[in-house]
Image (cartoon, rainbow, N blue to C red; front, side, top):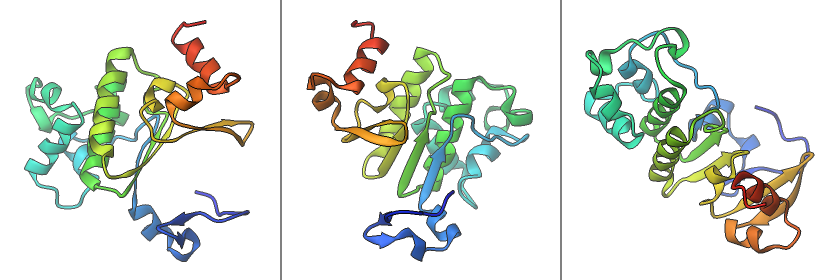
Length: 192
């Protein structure tokens, strides 16, 4: 969303400024904190991630996103209307629908932006399962305050006031004596 004003960002050693915005964005699939849903059917909202998606592809994406069972319980199944901004769906269902859409678009880079921050534990677990299923062999950027969402990441970067202050795996950061990550982990898991 912003031009680089210092340093360089590369994808496969190519400066992103060499790509057009639409080409650069074609590499990425984003699951935001508040997904944008259209006042249309569940199937339409999932298929929005890929032009000319088949019914089989839409259902496969729904399965991976842990949403298919819920959809099949509805009288109109994938033809169920979600309402304005998805008002007929719970927060967890909206998030899993956004994951299904992203899965269908098959991006090289996944950006998971605070996608579990407003969810209960069960929905958070379902969304994490869906994320890790699809994240295999993809570059995945997880932005999260809930550390349980990021704990399986290969590399965790802890930022404070716009600066990187720690980086490493979950276990590496927990082993550090004066780790901010460890402090927040203990607060979130009631170990303090």
